[in-house]
Length: 173
Ligand SMILES: C[S@@+](CC[C@H](N)C(=O)[O-])C[C@H]1O[C@@H](n2cnc3c(N)ncnc32)[C@H](O)[C@@H]1O
Image (tube, rainbow, N blue to C red; front, side, top):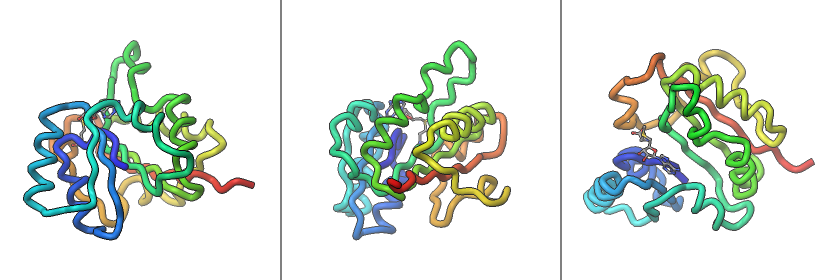
């Protein structure tokens, strides 16, 4: 699942690279959905489903333990302190994600806003269901294998170099 796929370039590239997988993209912005449909048509990908709307509504309707991988790439940063409550990463959102992710499934998050990276690490560290998959600085300084550059990433609008965070949903004890 890709949450906030923007123009869909990353989603469609992942679908083309993994024809055996089924991808679900969620994006409220109509122009983004239209752009993604164009990319899907050009690529001929058959393994993508799209929903125009809020990912939180989609997640609420997904069955338990159904997702292998969740991408949140360069989400809206809401840099002003008074707007932090609008950020996607919130304790309730993580609870909803934990319900629908399979044990061992990954959440892959990227941002080029230092405060949002710190915010995300803080929230995920506080949530005992997730574990941060990093052993050394390289792990958060460099994208994971197979990453495809996104349109927002290219714009470099943030206040730092992109930070790449991978978390796994822990297995049940
Ligand atoms: C800064 S853009 C990044 C887009 C894309 N991931 C990229 O890197 O080019 C953030 C995207 O998240 C979408 N978005 C914001 N809130 C969302 C939500 N609740 N559910 C799904 N997408 C959301 C926005 O419409 C926007 O397209």
